[in-house]
Image (cartoon, rainbow, N blue to C red):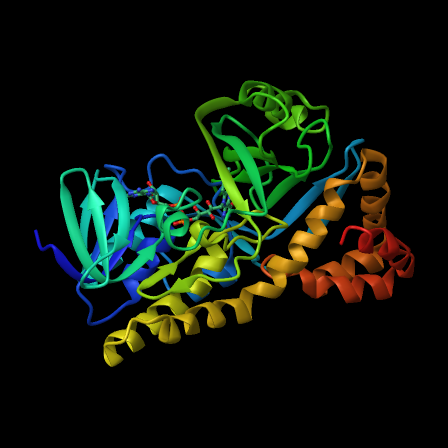
Length: 394
Ligand SMILES: Cc1cc2nc3c(=O)[nH]c(=O)nc-3n(C[C@H](O)[C@H](O)[C@H](O)COP(=O)(O)OP(=O)(O)OC[C@H]3O[C@@H](n4cnc5c(N)ncnc54)[C@H](O)[C@@H]3O)c2cc1C
């Protein structure tokens, strides 16, 4: 195996593979500690149609189901429906998705080294030295795509996420749900600080991914969180008699990172906290930032210049598309974290109004929730009365 590469990517998750699949004319190595890419998958696998369009790959191997709308359940059991008008999202098999992207990376010429953990990264003669157990590699450019516990971020940047979410869920069968709609459940006894979900993964509604997120560290042990998910008054009617096939759990880093490029180094995906704070979705940000990353790498290779002056363009490019949603999303989270169940109940009760639903259906965008703020405030002027409370959070 070669020891010397133009580009070395740590992590064959969605971010690392997406970059490997997009860079041309580079000798690239991807190092992944798992023996099988994408296993275990720590993801609910709900992505917008827009995300798949931007990613540029759509394949039956990973698309499991089409999602048109959502049922929203309040803490006390009111049910509201939004969407239903058009195809909004896909349920994807996250393991298959990562493996599909890795195949595209290999077709693009990248070498893959699986089952090998990177233990140390440091500046070296060529640019960066990457050490695994017993082996060393040199590269001009290191892409840290190794997720929340990124060695690259901790070595070269030192940032930590502003907030971390903990998610737990399961792949289930023997369920009977409307296959075209997801369910979203609110309630501080169910999912403190976030929400729970049911995502139908088959076109007949007989299998699904269920789960919830809460702030990290979680207020209860995982077993109790799962027990609550199965037994909360609003979720239980959907989850009686289901078969749990596989349990999934993971952490999600939130916050805006001020720098994601240094001399010879870039960060992408969870390692750069590129996640939508309101939904915990990280795949759409990867679709955006992997393009920016690949374009910048190509420019650096062309100019044979891997300095921060060239690479910081990557940070500017993805920030111009994602920063606003991340920063506003963090504000919304700080506000939402403080709401009691009766306050959530009151806010959701606006969904009884047809004009509010119309506004949501017209302006709602799962990748850009901020687009809804002004139209909603115009429809519901009393929302502006929350503003002073919102501002005290800063
Ligand atoms: C419960 C849960 C549900 C979620 N649901 C959704 C959802 O529905 N939609 C959505 O868009 N997002 C969702 N997310 C978020 C999404 O899963 C992440 O944002 C996404 O996985 C980030 O991809 P990544 O490639 O940056 O990191 P990862 O997927 O974490 O990949 C990093 C890879 O690097 C490897 N690695 C780490 N360290 C090393 C090392 N030292 N050496 C070698 N390899 C290493 C890891 O093994 C891993 O394969 C969810 C997350 C969780 C936890």
